[in-house]
Length: 66
Image (cartoon, rainbow, N blue to C red; front, side, top):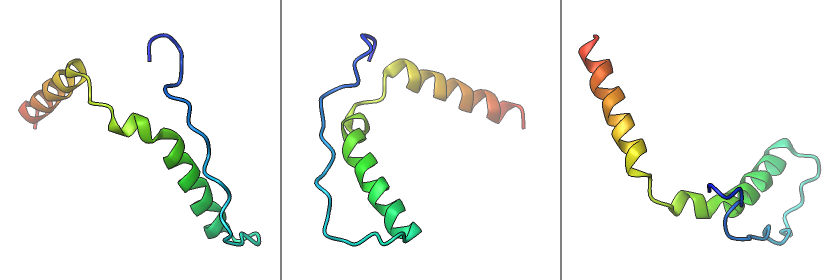
């Protein structure tokens, strides 16, 4: 967002009952779920038209240089 805000306020999900017990995979999964919950509003936003136009221009340009 242009005004510097981070979007709608979201709270992290409540801790689950799953024991982490210093297991790297369980800790990584818990962090992943928290990040998904925090950033889910960004995933749902439409891609700006200008960015789509730039990506299309790059794709066309890269295909012509093969």
